[in-house]
Every structure is written in C-alpha cells, then in structure tokens.
Image (cartoon, rainbow, N blue to C red; front, top):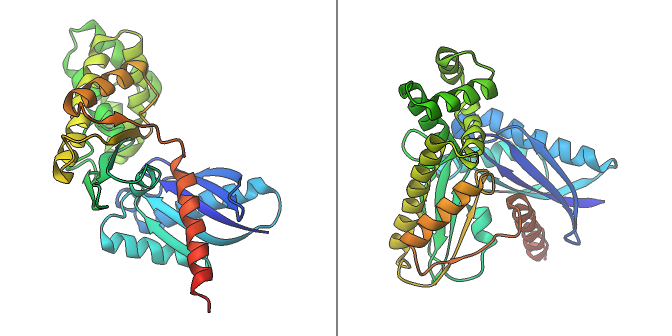
Length: 308
C-alpha cells in the first residue's frame, strides 16, 4: 500500500500524519524537534525521520511512502530550505519531497483571498496574503531578534520578573511553581539549565504561567497580557504591510500556546480586536501536519501529470 506523509516541525517537536491516496488519515506520530536554526541541520533531519518512523510503526504493516511535505520552522532562508530538502531526500530516497516553512501550513488552510494567521508557539510570527495572492511574513526568526509573545518569550520574561520581585507574593508563588516544574532548587539551577539548552527551559515555563494566570496569579496575568500586546502588534504590522489593515479579512491564531489558558485566549482576542477591528476571527480546522499531507498529495498529482 502507498501513502504520503505530512510534517509540522518546530523547536520542540515534530508532528507527522500518514495519509493514504484516497485522502484518509491512517496514522499519526511524533518525533523530536526539527528546526535547523535551533538544533542544527543533521539533528533536524533526524527529527523528521524519527517522526516518520513512529508514524509508520503505528500502522503495523508495510507501507510505501511516495511523497512527503515537511513544514519546518527555520527554513525560510533559501539556503536553509535547500539544505533541509537535500538531507530529507537522503533519508527518503525516491520519494517526492517538498519542504516549506511551518508558517506556510496554516495559511494554506485558510480561505482564498486576503488572510492572516498569527502563530504563537515556541516561537511567534504572522503570515498572510493580500487579495492578489502576495504573501508576506512578520517575525519568526528566532528568539534573538523576534519571537515576541511566544512561549519562549513568556517563559524567559517570567523567570526574569519572578526572580526580581522577591518581596511580591505572586512572584514568589510563580517562582515556586517554576522550580517544581523544571525540577530545580533555585534560580542558579534554572540558569545552568538555560545555559545548556534554553529551548529546554523557557518554553516549558509557559504552561506554569498559563495555569497560574487562570488560577488568579496577578503576575502571571500581567505577563500574558503583555504577550498578547506583543502578538497583536505582530499581526498589525503584517496587516499594514499587506495593505489590509482597514479591510475585512479572516484572521486565525494557532500554535502551542493557543487554547492552553482561558485568560491568555481572552486577552489575545481582545488585543487583536482592538488592533484590527475589521478582522473576522477564523478557526483553522485542519492541523498543520494534515495540511502538509494534503500538499504532499498535490505533489503526487503533479508528478503524475508530468509523466507523458
């Protein structure tokens, strides 16, 4: 039997979907991170392969992969895209391989015409297009120069703020929750972990902040309110660049921080509505890896059309 694979890879994990040639999803799996700018190209390619192996193993029967689409963070630069595509082709010889950015996947699932998707996961970005199909992005270039309002940014800000406000009960409680979640005794231990691998520390602090905010922690709520303002500003800058800020267009939000905290979701929605009052909230029903699998299916069709 034959199938295609779709991947959604970032700085924390890689989701994979197997789809048969009728378009039915037949298996799902997960592997480690696959963002080459964060973990290196060889490790990122290995993350894709491990996600594929886990997915195909779940089928329990032999399956021929004929095409795949990997939507990976860190592949916007042409050199990065080309390197990852070459490495993945080596892992999957004879398979039609398409590499795009993880940001392309939710936008591909949006209605035709002008649209914007705000991504808030380990990193953050916005991607969109105007009515003519011109596509632009804002942010998504890593924590050193962007990723405002992301899980990484929220976790880093939480750690910095909680350690400074030692006389504040909310800060002390948040610090205790962070220590417990990370398995650290103090800030020195957190710093040591972050120095070794910041991606293994700051994004993991986000769930602590999210739960604390929903439980009424004032500091956690202020951190998420500030993150909401940052994320809404990213969407606003993109809308202005596309020339749709005053138009009616669908606006979706997606990523690992969405749906994790009622307080954060409501805060972000309020900020987006304030910045872009003419936008209409849209729900992306398809998961990114599913959209990637659909794009892989298109690759199969293109390949067949190319055969005389």
